[in-house]
Length: 132
Image 1 (cartoon, rainbow, N blue to C red):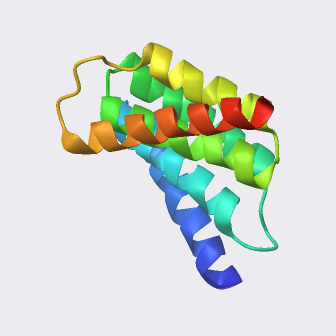
Image 2: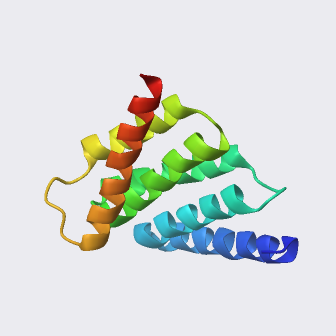
């Protein structure tokens, strides 16, 4: 991704977010927030990890509020990775993963939901093991 691509993506998702809020489309709002978080966490040299964390948290709250389990787990796993791998904050990562597992559905409907849930479970095990 080039800086021009990054800037275009930010403009697109910011515009999508404004439109979603105006229309009251919570799914599109959460999706736009998550996409902004991804942009701010992956652009080498232009990361704004605090923005990424803020956008992920907003998206997670929307996904949880509306029981969008797949998106909830996906955003939670991604936020945990930002804390763990980019911010080098295993304690915050562990809190995010454990929160996801505490809040998430026990009876998952789709295979992809199980995948992201399992990612959280593996991360909790890994981080707890590293603390020992």
